[in-house]
Length: 409
Image (tube, rainbow, N blue to C red):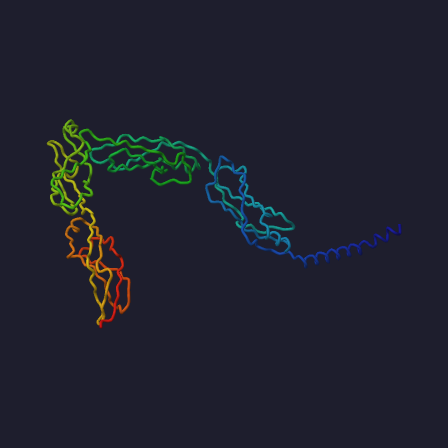
């Protein structure tokens, strides 16, 4: 009994000692690993969960938050080295269409630690029901075919389009448009046409999906009765100059559309319309000329009654050679004399035949220029001088001449 009494009397002292020891331990721990409040140095990604598959987000939702954390210094160090120790969740479970303000839920993988502040502390979420609706495609045909042609009913690969997206956006769609241009067409027009969603005020609606997003469109183009497209046949007379050749001849436009008040008369045309004759007699250069079409009675042409004819004419290329052409010396210095070997060369020329026909040995000069050359022996290339630069010098034989310069005695 006395022992129990002593213990009871000692309890206040024991408790005081325990409290003092605990305080000392806490103080020691605090000194070695002090508790600090810090803002985490990097934003933390927000994970959105629980979204009903029948709903969709219609606003931009923050994807990151900043955290202010109170924890021992050692815990801060571990957290700052590993962002995987954080889980930031935005839970949309059970939410109905409309606007909702939610608080991100943060879980830390270490303790002791306390989240003092989340920025932003709340997130606005707007949800809308996902709907799918079919709309007919409204094709707009721009322009019209060239005169004498007409467009038939367009052919669309799809007549309707399925549109999926938020109900609030789908409700603003008034029509689905596509456009195809057939201005001045003379043949069937085929295009891939992109589709656009428009409100009643012709404002484009985005943020929804289209299936298909584009369609293949064909607009058949046919020629009207009484109209016909025929080739322009160029008629010429005479012969171009001797030594020249015809390189090309064509009409612009190469075809014309003819018409008549009597459709049967158009059908009798053989498929071409001739031009008035173009005189090529002794022509030696390119020709460009406006010429009338030779139209049968009762036949007219859509647009101009004339065409432009372009005719290309160029000299025939040939070759020619001359032998034993003497070499002439130029610019030999005073008090010097020269010997060359050989004294004559053969030359081979090519170019327009009319120019070659005008050449003879009297108007061909082969020279060697000795400017600034003193006594010595040289191997020098002769130069052929021609009056016309259109003639090519293909070869000089020999290509080098031995030149010996000595002092005159």
